Image (cartoon, rainbow, N blue to C red):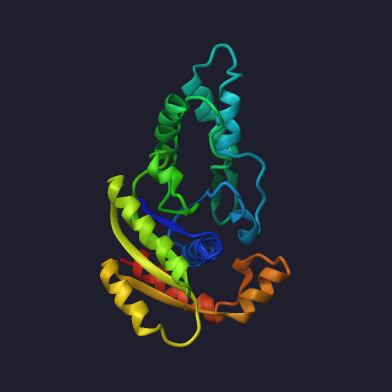
Length: 249
């Protein structure tokens, strides 16, 4: 049975780092076939995972408006193109959603994409989705419903406010999420009492406080894939605890 984790948060809060290290945990612990979905239009998950990216679902969606080979239905063509867009690796596969929609109506295309991507996800044991701040692909249901939604904030009130807004959005849209968690990233010292009170009012379980890690900053600055971080790095150990909670049940 597929376990799907969606990671969302304000830009720069570290959601891509968390997604990458969750993927690494699933691979290292041999939890089955793993699919990484990059649902952020900036499409940089492949960089922290140390893999390539040649085509996105957004590219295919735009092409579908103009070119579908004769003898194929649009659904068949989209299915073929999306499967060829999956970057297949020895340890995990990667599918990038890519750029947002242009002008015009995409309702029919999005319905087809939802059907195709849902079918693809069911072939994997673990799916980790790195979302953009607006959670477009969740709100438009162009990806399957999720088991765990992780809202990531850095140690700033703006980050927490963004997480609160995304939680409210998930409720308004009635997205089918089995469990929602909050993760505070780049924490130094103890959280102020005002923060704890605000988190309690949010009524979302605080899953983890991930400490600020100079080693992570060094890797990022040198452009090294974050999945190469040592397992004993501060951030690696913290994410391992998150992964155990989500994936070892």
